[in-house]
Length: 491
Image (cartoon, rainbow, N blue to C red):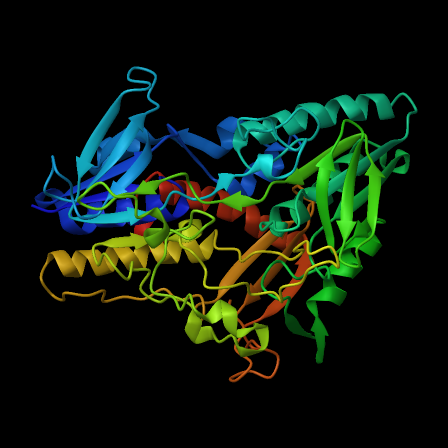
């Protein structure tokens, strides 16, 4: 019997675990280790953040789902990986610390035959002074929509500001990136438009100044170098598409910015040209940068090999070309990116979703004259992470069954497309959403004039997009709960 241990129960980890449990049955053991007792459909957190949904609408308990699927579930966080075993345990193993209230603080070890690292991001609030507290959690000045509870807090704070606006007070809103190396621009993009929509519904939009602050060189970059789309027979840059959305809604923007300090009523930021400026606010939602989970790695002699297994940011190394970063932006290639998500040194270890280390940026790296990096980091969430989870699960299944001694399936961001439906306001008849697709995710300028296939890359906005996003909310929660026909819903 083989044991597969999956660290993390988010989109990628949950996808891998549920498909493995279905495919390999009770002959083998699937164990999920995740510190959270609930699964969260993160794309709908932005609706929680404006009061359009409740926390209960976007989360559910994992334990009953895993029990039904025959998955061994441990509510705990991973502390260390021992891919060579150790002096007390011959097999590879991980050490964990329970977060389950009944065992909180207790430590344990779990051996494995295959390990999937799907730990997702650590929300690195401490990277920007004032953005978080000294424990790396959400601070007291700004709000977040990165988790369901954060989003609920944001909604409460937003309601308080709206109450004051209804009494005649003018308020300033600042929404966007809280650091020059942030990813997840999409969440801030959605939230700023949902706040705008909420204020219009409440009849107080005329009493608001809304500003979007981002580390993107141009709006619409999203950490993927932007994109071009074909509309009405013309080829249009994503910059024009994005700027038009902000302009139509009278939302100001600050781009090429690194927020370096947050105070009670203002942020201090540096721009790519080296200027040090500040922006005041009454309500601010700023996304923190991401880091890898704080997991150590040790060899069989208990020597620290963390730097061998993980990059400096804490993301796990896989089958990517990590020497390519030194070649320079103009010499980077789609071939630098991983395909199998397998660790190069330990063939029974994989990393998926945010947990894997990208070989380099997708957007052009830039720094201010002061040496401050200001550019988005590569997104690896949502649809791509689920596709990675399924592909790695397929490879492990085949390896367990003896069909191959190496991965049989790939999930390269250079060979996959991605679809995104970004809400611009919730409402059955008043809602809108920007529906966007791109193929491939990693631009290939050798194959395509604009880096991507224009027949597979497009963007539009309207009410239909909102209905699609609402449908996807229910479809993916249905899928995650393993309800009838869940496997036919695509990743």
